[in-house]
Image 1 (cartoon, rainbow, N blue to C red):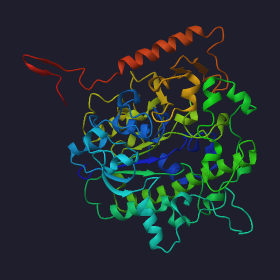
Image 2 (spheres, rainbow, N blue to C red; image 1 turned 60 degrees about the vertical axis):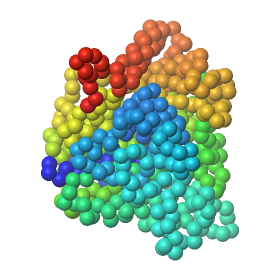
Image 3 (cartoon, helix red, strand yellow; image 1 turned 45 degrees about the horizontal axis):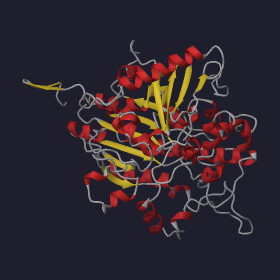
Image 4 (cartoon, rainbow, N blue to C red; image 1 turned 90 degrees about the vertical axis):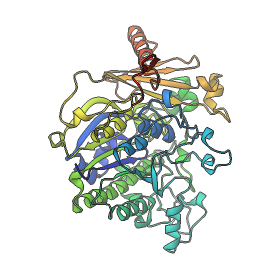
Amino acid sequence: MKNRKILFIVVDQLRADCIHGALAQHVDLPNIAAFRREAVSFLNHYSVTNPCGPSRASILTGLYAMNHRSVRNGTPLSAAHRNLALELRKSGYDPLLFGYTDTSHDPRTGHPRDPRLLSYEGVLPGFHEIVEMCLDQSYPWRANLAAKGYDLPEYAHFYDPVSPDPARAARADDPAFYAAGDSDTAFLTDAFLEQMAVRRDQAWCALLTYIRPHPPLVAPAPYNKCVDPDSLPFPVRHASIAEEEGQHPFMAVNRTRPSMASCVRGTAVDETDDRDVQMLRAIYLGLAAEVDHHLGRVFSFLKESGQYNDTLIVLTADHGEMLGDHHMWGKAQVYEPAYRVPLIIRDPSAPEGHGRTVNALTESIDVAPTILESCGQNAPGAMDGRALGPFLHGVTPGDWKTHIMMELDFGQPDQPTAMQLAAKAPLEASNLAILRNERFKLVHFNAGLPPLLFDLKEDPEEMNNLAGKPGFQNILLQMTQTLLSHRMRHADQSLARMKVGPNGVLNGPD
């Protein structure tokens, strides 16, 4: 297409089952639902790591965390890695950034006093930042609010709910101090639509990345109460916190990383009170509904401006959210809700796939190769992911992957985490790897911790650890061997396929 456009949308911390699954029945996301009918939905798509920085590093480099090694927020991403933005420049695109990439810059490429090294929320090389929308900064949004006449609180209190009654303390489901039309989600969408209105006659590429429904869990009216907490199913969990923590030493120490209380600011909640649990779940879904509303504005703009059928649209999330399942919150855990995320792709040149759903296992590292393939580019040989193009055309490759891998580092280099201390693990051993196939899921821990094994066919909610039970030792061994083979197969291939000799470089740089 002469004016081929690429819109890559990343929603922060959005669980897959908000769109297709149990929670989807309890929150109205009409614009995403309509988009799914015109696109291909991947129902078993997984982030290969978390939290935000590592997950986005994998999405944008196409690399497993074991290869890019930006394994925690603040861990630098090596400048040697190729990435989606830099590769797209080879096709003539100037990749535009609306939001953030959470990239911690390589300190070897600049001076120690470089301000880029003061925050993990940097911009991935290759992107042209149009609007900054970082969780810890958000200066353009704050300036916009000030220009509109808001009396701004200190930024540390930006996400505090505000009681409509001065006589009572704020509750978590009280609204934010800003109106819905002035929220961070609204501001980012306004900025995107304003900027893109004058680019309709050219090829463009934009990464539009929303903070919501990432905590702190506070929403402007009416989204703070658009979902009824009493209508929601309870989280999937064991009967008590003690029983949950007794499942494994990792849960005993890491269950509250983060705590439920840390998901809100300016008010108190009690994780033992189901009313508070359901209230926070409802606010989360309300924030998802707010994002859906503004996605509807984006899709309408593309259609009304005549660009919809010239635009490859990719909609996904960086990672999931436990949301009280297993008595846990956040994403630094091992269970499905922390990793399973939506992926919806509309390729206007492949109408035969529109409305299709795909059950095959896919990974976040597959997205970058898919976008590059849509531009006629081959993904760099070092990328671990595989393009999803055949699925977009309604074809399932006969040799598609039979398993996927996920990773999590739970240590910190400056102040050892509780899990590091409990496991007496050095930083390099404070990690785990997950192998999942269509039926079984293995969680292999470093530092001598015992494994977990789940039968997802019989136990999709991961309540019963089979690792130490008779009759499952062969499966445990096979899964462990497969995990080892997978990691060996996907070790860094940046230079490994090349050979230097009298005739020059065999398989030289692409």
